Image (cartoon, rainbow, N blue to C red; front, side, top):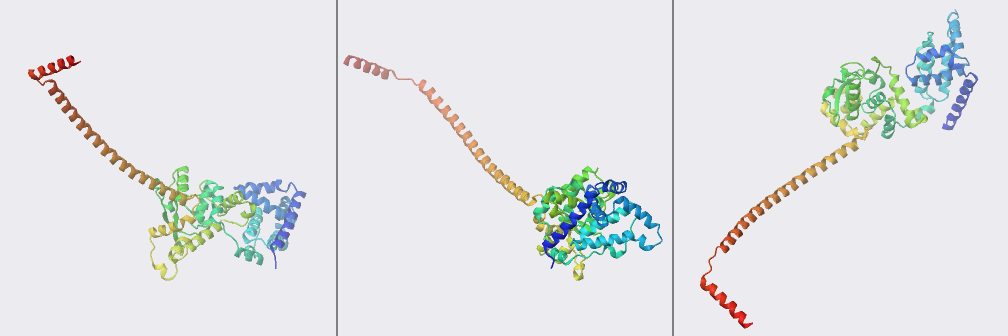
Length: 420
């Protein structure tokens, strides 16, 4: 039984082999033939992939790109079919070598795609048989895949932060909508059919009918507040288009490999090269499926969100977009990458505080109003009292004292003085 230590050992020997060949041929990637191929690539990620896989292939056959190009031209002039198929045979041997190193199917397919691309871009394409792309994974790889861990929400958040704007849109379409890379590059503004001017970016969940490219089955995708914000920003940046591919290269449709390249670049930046080799864009759909499956939705809800064909009696039942959006909202807390749940709770808490303050303000206002009324009443009463006192004072001043009283006062004063 092959162990992890065995795999690390054989891969280590292989890595040392092709790196040593690269040191012996330091100018292999500076030849005109190779530079012409690299110049036809758009993505920096693709160029890096070609350099690594190209080094492996040329080291395996022990020939430089210039030598391969010259020999290929010569071979194609030969009448011997074995001579003409020399590099097809070399590609097959290279494939078997990669299989023996216990690489995953996706990794092997990438390297073989580079080999095929080198000859194609050199205008000397290989005539590969159909079975060439049937890659056999070792038992070690199959057992390892069963225990493979797809990216969790924490990793997705890190990858999302390390992505470009277009990369972020593609990640959310894969992770929050379950779209494949083929679906992502096929998505158009007219297909979404949304009035972006009226879109409320705060708390909307907008369900959209969408046909999967691979199966041609119509399902639902739900655009979340996270995704709506990004899409509306891109819509504005792109000049508010009514049609055209959402993710494009100068208006043209992207190749399906591009979202995977964006994803892998962000994975390396966020999680490191080792973890990045374990992940691919399709893992986003797998993660979405896992979250939806754990929600225990009814079959028609889950199949509608995943874009699966409704079978049996379920195909006869109608599921409203309101139901789709409502059920999707139940799992969105596990899909958000911007802390939407936290912001939602925080917003609710702030609203409660505002409502509480509003109620408090009302109570204070009523109290102040009552006190103002009391003060005004006291002021009126005080004014009435002042008038009463003034009247009393006026009456006291105008009192006429009888003369006999005055005479008695004088006698009392005189008696008091004589006593002294």
